Length: 358
View 1 (cartoon, rainbow, N blue to C red):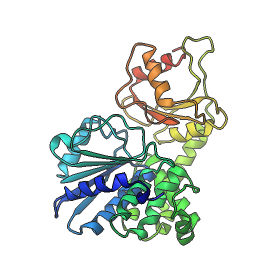
View 2: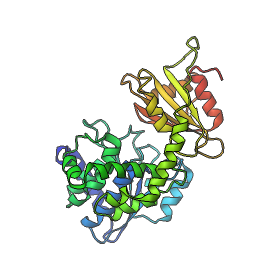
View 3: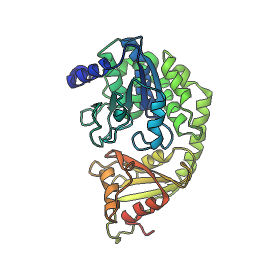
View 4: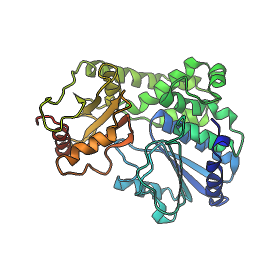
């Protein structure tokens, strides 16, 4: 797949670029996982090749932060005084970000859109395309249509391998693996993700490699990041021993789910949920982490191997059974990967709606 296959992206992207002042400040607000950091770094390095006069700042999202509904996000972005904003790998939401403040906003994403943002936004989404390109893939293709970013293919590959695997249908991937070796690329992906999963939540370290290096080798050999991975692995070894629980079969509204409860300051709940879906392929597996966020907020990560199950719909239906609406920042993402953060009382409502005896 290349951008030439999707000409509908070219004119909107060029129109967005044309709206940026010649010496403007562009803020790239990206998700903190490997795909988000990869997309953010591709934009961070590539935009200046289109216009060297632009100042570009890459800002990853914070721990437990929702790009659209966390009140402090708008203030944080406005404090940077952007002339234009790119939001990538953080979703698309009707609430928007800085449109009401007169800032042109571009969304580059691949998750299920949650409505159309306000006027002043440009949405370029891979959701619904086949194959579905992740955010780093889209970022690369957008820039490649405007300027030469061939040397940044390895940065895009970090996000692509993380989200779509080594066999992703991205045409340059085989050559990138040959040039930089699959070993270093895979290790770099693992260490990028270890940085955001570790308790230190040290995103700046991998981001600086992605923004400045000419390949993944130094990132893959960083000892501090390797230490983060060891911490995550130790917590994960404990969490993997926690058994799943199932709602009683006779419970009204019992859903095809299993819930694993853990208590860790590290973002391992998606990994725990992912490991269980191979053993429970006909269920949605929810991993609830009681220790990741402060103030008793429960981090919930859902995964399923079944294409007939739709996790956001299942989670929303659980609240609806009790006549409730889920929080606005919950049950987004993908049909097979969703979740969010719930205060303890709302987490108990979710369990009841799923058929558990609470």
